[in-house]
Length: 153
Image (cartoon, rainbow, N blue to C red; front, side, top):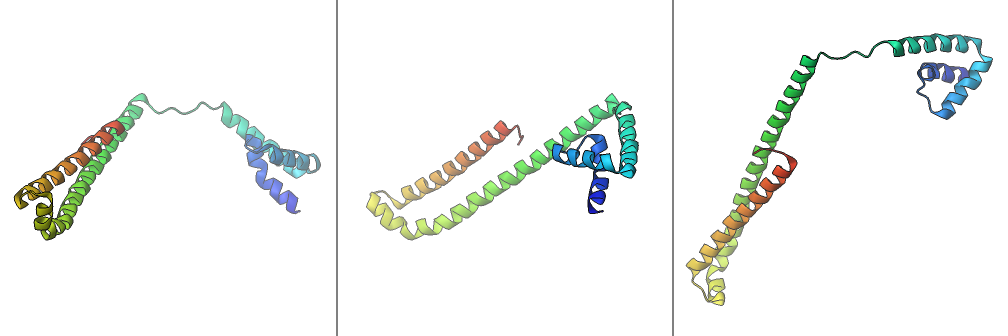
């Protein structure tokens, strides 16, 4: 009886041709000996055949075009939100990195300036320039990557 229940659950898929070969053979073997399942299978097969003969519904061209436009607008909106978020994160990272390293530079500016044989002001100018340059480089690389992905800023 267990085999009967299992095969009965597979009849609709068998009628639609959706079973793997092993399951299909299992159903066919059972159908040879079970009149009730064979009758039910024939009913399902007739229904599946009738459904295959029905025309495939098509969306009106105007609806499809409007849907494509709407999806494109949503994609652009999401890309713009991601761009803003990415730039905000980049700015936040730059500020955090600056504030974390400024303490280091402030503590070691005089000894480091003496060791490099430059003025403390020059050391600070180099530090600020390097910070700005690094930020600009990160922003440029991020922008390049987004252009390659087709995003907009």
